[in-house]
Image 1 (tube, rainbow, N blue to C red):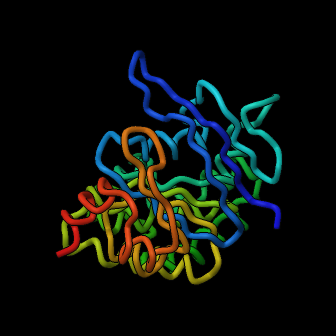
Image 2: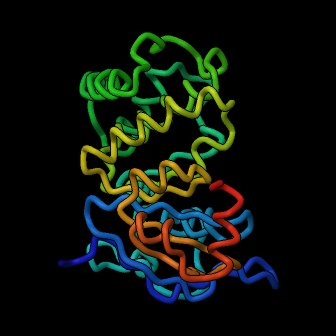
Length: 244
């Protein structure tokens, strides 16, 4: 099988700090990869490299066999294809919910206003936000804003959706609603890479769990094996803090 995404020997420094060291792994269509690890282990930087919000210092990121770090790439089109949902939502505060979900379709995908609106309404319904289309982001709870952010990313018809700690800024009672939307997306066969501290999601929804520590992938595997029989002492220490 040809991999949808293949990451080879990826390295990234910020000054003297080595954030990613020789990262390599591959993703097949329909995979849900959960990336876990302590703060500062390089998880978010890895996502930001895949989305080209950060440019790696070395290595390759192949999508359908093409290295996105070489040649003249249309970054906006790349980010439509490889969407990202941020910890802090990143909605446009000067636009209502519906317009947030229409803007990228019209500017990047060149869809008509009518087509963009229809797709936005469809996806806002999917995430349970159809009753808030005229609201501004400031009027919404954190969980509602994150669901709009997911709908907005989906409006671009991404092949891969990256989630950077999508529930960490939410009140505990809001987390379940966002995780339910993500689980439903995983069930549709959408390819997802999720950086999270939600171990229940990692265990129940992932096809593979990747544990990062100090800029390297220390361990990875199928969820059942990963959680029941972690190989490294460092992995066991990390999991012990979350799982009683």
